[in-house]
Length: 584
Image 1 (spheres, one colour):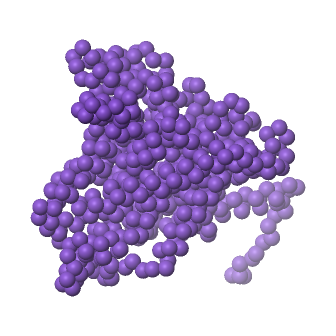
Image 2 (cartoon, one colour):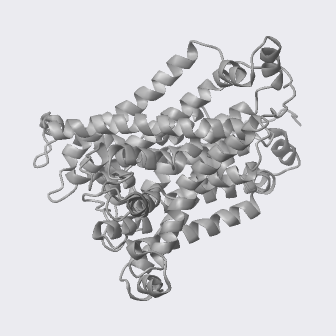
Image 3 (cartoon, one colour):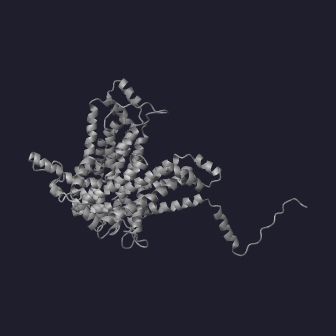
């Protein structure tokens, strides 16, 4: 018997079978991760590329026929009022970022490098200023520093007999200060994190050479953290020029037009989305340009403070000056958190907020009106919760899959996914919202005013936060732990669910809570996309501010703050006391 294996020819297939078998054979060899990669690519195209691409195209189209035209740009920048709004936005961004740096850098240095008392209180101030929505803080400052009825100005006139206002919040300076009082936490976080890495040996060397404490700070410490100061300055500048709430609440009554309020006027009837698209393009170009300038400036100089092991870090003893620094931190806390919140609480329980605190002025009617009588209050609360929860869930899920593929290098060109996930970071929220309107508001999808378009816009807007958080979490889990599970017979998905997911779930929960919180207070994107029945709490707050009913507005702001603080408390309990500030 012949031992040689006989190779038999494959039986002939029926007509039509070879092609079907070939396709099935090829599909059977496709890795599941490749399908995930393709699905994520499609999702990112829909969330990021399509809105921006449509926005760009619409800016060159006529509304009636869709023909190519440059008239949208001529209309957008043909009037001096529109050009002035752009200049005002740039000046406002510079002013707010500068004030934020002035407020926060001494606080960061005091907490990181000195023996100043009350560091826990300073951290509470930073967290409070970060949590309070900027537009709600603006309402608080209207109650405090309105030129006629503001508490500060009424007390000033009563004490001095003067007729004018001590401080008028309805001014360019007032608007810049109010924005800075809710932006400085970013500078604090950036600079403190950098100062924590600077060894005390650097300052000791300066002291040995004859420099005093303040000279060492100015000549050694601050130059070493200059990249962090610059990064925070640029982020606040970009956030300010894209901010809608505070410029609308303060700027419109003060007749100070900025880019975001001008864009809102383009959306008044009749809607001129093509002109708005053309007018929004400089915001995107300015953002990209500022990021490029930052990289160029920092690439020309080194900022290395140490190599190898870090040196000892000892708190600098300031003597009596530590109380001066504490006074500075307390003053910033009073201006940014304590004073606005106190006046908002007083107004929320008042029949007429201008009458001050008295028993005959106290009432629960404002809360009763919102909870039991107002047509949209409870609906907007429910909308806010489920829009934000859905967006946070989608953002964290998408970000986790992208972070895993990129960090484990599972597919070629995976870095492109990471790039698209971070791209919304350099896209102003208001530009993203107009892009979603241009792409998905019209037929055949006709999503304008629906929950879907708001959730998708929130997901895209805050995807960079979720991705940065997920990427750090995945990098912290060594691949060998998954490989060990796979060697023992586990598949990749099983290894991820049983090994990786339990190790990163705490970090992912923190990321989910942050996205939920920032989405629940988002106004710049929501204001352009909500419909009559999909209003969120932030949009309803803006509507109430236009109506001028500050008592009901303060009560509704209190409900928003209550929801936010409950979530912050949950995050502190489950993830850590500084979970928001560590991931910002």
